[in-house]
Image (cartoon, rainbow, N blue to C red; front, side, top):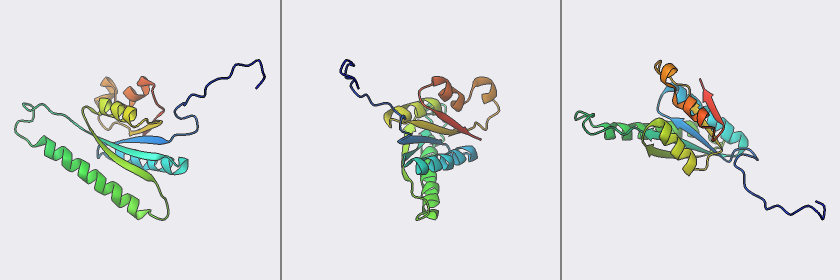
Length: 156
């Protein structure tokens, strides 16, 4: 630094030293579980925190037609946690990954955006949509990429 150059205050930039928090969106589909595994590998190599996020859908009371939707989504979340714990137990001592499980409520896109913002994510990893209609309307992954707020990896 020269004497004539003004001193600049150091500002934090997310992701400049590699990701510190990687969000993986899971919904129980095969592609989302592959995305979580891929994100786990990234987190291990980068020494980052893996934040596994399940977004519980919010269904209007009238639309549920008496079906216990909240119980079903809670059960999905519990099953996902059990699967993740089993997977981490199998690789314990071989691969160590710091991870957390978070549940948010809402539609998948807005839930993942909220999660990534609140958790200060440096990267987001999601599975490719397995629904044919998303080719027309746009998948959660495409919407996350278009938001342009984090690097997004889409795992097939």
